[in-house]
Amino acid sequence: AAAQTRVDVDLAAETHTIAPEIYGQFLEHLGTQPYGGIWVGPDSDIPNTDGIRDDVFGALEALDVPVIRWPGGCYADLYHWPDGVGPRDTRPVRVNMVWGGTEEPNAFGSHEFFNLAERLGAKTYLNLNLGTGTTAEAADWLEYLTAVAGDRAAERAANGRETPYKVDFLSIGNETWGCGGALTAGAYADLYAQYASFAKTAGDQPVRILSGAHDGNPEYTDTLLGHPYIAGLIEGVSLHVYTLPTGEWSEKGDATGFPEAEWASTIKRTLRMEGVIADQRAIIAKHEDLPDGFGLYVDEWGMWVDQDETKNPPALYQEGTIRDAVVAGLNLNIFHRNADLVKMTNIAQMVNVLQAMILTDGPDMVLTPTYHVFEMYKPFMGAEALPVSYASPDYTLGEVTVPAISLSAARTADGQLIVALVNADARASHNVDLTSFGAKKAEGRLLTAKTMDAGNTFSDPDAVHPVPLAAKAKDKTLVLDLPPRSVAVVVLK
Ligand code: AHR
Image (cartoon, rainbow, N blue to C red):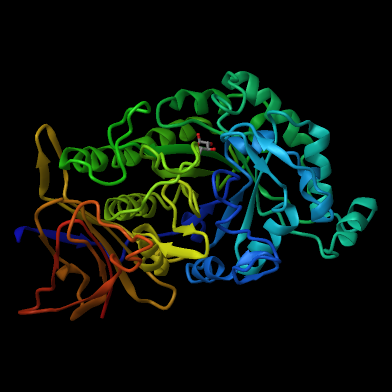
């Protein structure tokens, strides 16, 4: 193994809670999500409960999904909620004009979404339609979902739900600099302030999230936050950061069969997340009128490669590989380090779209390597992030040099010390010295694969899966050996 990475941890330092919502999911009407991937309908031959397929539900349940964002994405700005309530056989069929002109049967609507979240024990993150909606439509939707009295509550009850639903998080508009209307920051801020003034729920008010910048236009958020009336209408601002292996939208790179140069450039590009968050932190700090506890919500992130052309474009269906798993681990470690500011993230997306947890094909289901990372990292939800410092060895390929090792640590509510480690080196294993934690042994699980593009397929669904990992202190020194292309989570004992 290559040079050892010594880790220093400050066990007495002030800590920040890792919001469970950092492990949030994103469910957009896009490709075969939700239709096929989540919703099959009560009459399907695929085993289901109230139309939601049981296999996918069970897999999501095992992740303890903390929150789900719905219905988009770009689709949110085309979605009219009345289309998705009432008897399903009378709901209108629309065309998903933003994602390939596929038919949108509206069978998965408000009740189906909120019931799914409730069954999973997940919070709800609703994205209101700013693009083609009105303030009235937005206000009516919230009344329909949450009112305890009046005709809209009665309509909801007649549609099968007497108890109000809970909207935990709310956004108005999406990517308003792009698909959400191509609005200047000033124009969007004016519209947001108007919509937010009427976007009231009965009972507890949701956390309101302004739709902010992407990784290339940080000044957009700066202008938004400078709007004279905005500070009283928001609890957070969002950020979108995708990882494209090449960095080019026209040719992003393939999901599999890619050269090592694209592994290396992927790692480099995904590690930009740290700097992008730092830039947003500096912008947020400038705006002193923002409320206490104001948060950054990375409500879209993940791998975006050239899509599988055998699927109906633009389904944004892509195979998941160990490269994705490494990308997930690197980003989650960055989110842990920024737990004081980052209050939620939503990986794009949950099923069958982009860096999905789960892929389906008819009745079959596959868990991706990214799924396994989310499952392994579960103990970090709600844990206290501990500051760690270390000097990683380099991973160099051609002109690209990146740190090979990434690490984050936390203390769980029951006092256990947990460490997440990533070896992003495509070729070399590396040792990590965890002696400073003062433990006798480390026990946990490791995810790795023989090749850079190995993943789980419908013919070999368990090719990449976590395996046990353990190390004992020798001469009071505790060292973990991380193979190339790996992600590990251990408990220190
Ligand atoms: O996640 C896919 C799309 O990416 C979302 O709809 C949009 O917000 C972003 O551009």
